Length: 114
Length: 113
Image 1: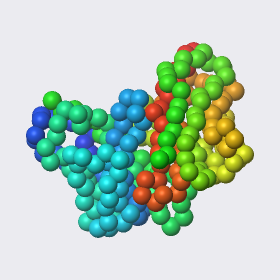
Image 2: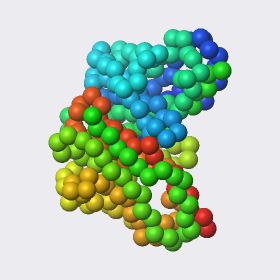
Image 3: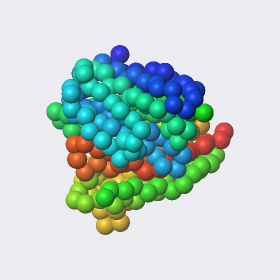
């Protein structure tokens, strides 16, 4: 089954404790992206990657890091989480060969930072 | 820069009622327009899209027409069902490869039996 898989789905952590949210897709997509969803603000892009070893900042990159060592994986790293990073996070992917505008989303990871 | 504005929710309707969710946009050039739907506990999925002016996107009984003169892409459905309860996001793409989609704030729809 074609899918984007995120883990963990739910996490409660404390300020300053490093964490990683994993994202993996099995569709051989070149493009991957991370978004955060906050009430009334829609989805805002954090980072994106056009292909392996190519990453770039989105609209709200502060406090986050990413890496793209393999085509299928695109982890989101919070080196020192803070309460303002409490949010619902989505990973998404799409092929870049023929642009359709359709992003394929994971089910989301709800993060709470105390 | 690009932006998308949606009506704030929640929108609460009775089953079989007519639905309209307003969406307007600001963009340079000629963007493509999309509606995504997010069912409870799930990620977003594409509902419909339109790539040029006067195009009508449709899917699952939902429709939206790309109106360049009013920079709008309102979502409509003639008769909603309880299963349509979800959050709906309007989005645009100006084919900027980096940030593929700019999203509106989302509108929660609640349909009561």
